Length: 452
Image (cartoon, rainbow, N blue to C red; front, side, top):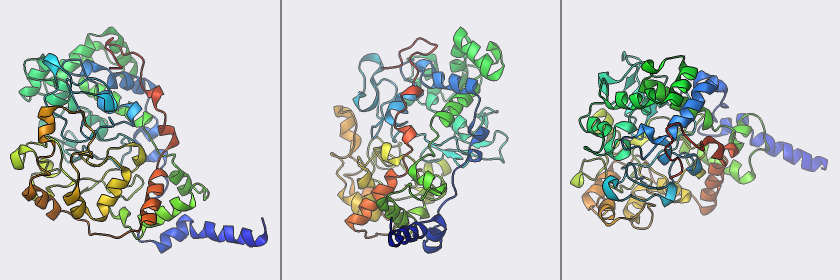
């Protein structure tokens, strides 16, 4: 390398260094992620992690024993299910091959929101769970979490990720099953979640009577069979997710840790746009590219909704958790770690391409108006479900209300700038997340099938 070339290289390196970048941009680059950003310093006990791994993929935790947490948040589909809106209790198969089932246990409806990815949710900064944040840390409460369970929430949950694990098992269409199908479903229908005969106690009783699980719980928590609760199960599953799906070794992480060659020229340009002109970091801030807050960005509404608004097919987002109409159509800012792997995108998976959802942010109201509800979503077809998927999008007053709540101003970016942003999104992918086969057990203690 000549002295001239060497000087040019050094100038470029300094121009794209974190210090120089921060001085010239609207938003400072975050500090590198460290072990201290995670619960248990990123190192939960191996016994707890292994127990959690088995529970996570075991259908014993569902009412009809036909679905596990891992069915819709699977290691083979980047901790989601690769569908816009998933199929819960009663469906068959995994990922894009999943259908709505048949016979007595046929799925009654689509899950109303996209199966959110789980990467890095074991970090301390993730204090609110679900797209609407309806489970969130609250140190002022004796049980430490605000949730729809209120004061019935059991104590001794390790963190918000563990608290979150208590709730899918209580929902008929998600995991519990329908009234009359099983005792767990009957308790869920009566909204009896806690206490003797409640959903959590009934599921824990299944674990208490399984000798293999009893041994695993004793090893992980030093407790006897009679002491096992579903809180122990939730804490174990949270430990597994936190350990297995930590993702902070991307090229961007390497760059933040001082490797100036970690990002390509296009990724560097995309980073400058992200933290500068494009203003992405106004919401996608911090170490995991989320402000952990809630925003309305005119995301198209597809699927069965949450029982509110037009024909009960709308989803009011954060309002459902807070009761405030000022929060209508607001959803939690998602982390962008591994975002290139976790499509479809949006709280309801409305966009089937990463570029599509990026372009939506440039002019949300126009994108909402022009959204192709028949072509974009990725979901198994069934006539009765298909009939409601686009009703809200075809209802002009609803679309107008969603557009009027939008917080983002239109922005013009060239094709090259969009391409550069795309390159930066790929720079947020941890290569360790590309192959998660080892996270999925070949068998589980219940003996139930793992691979169907």
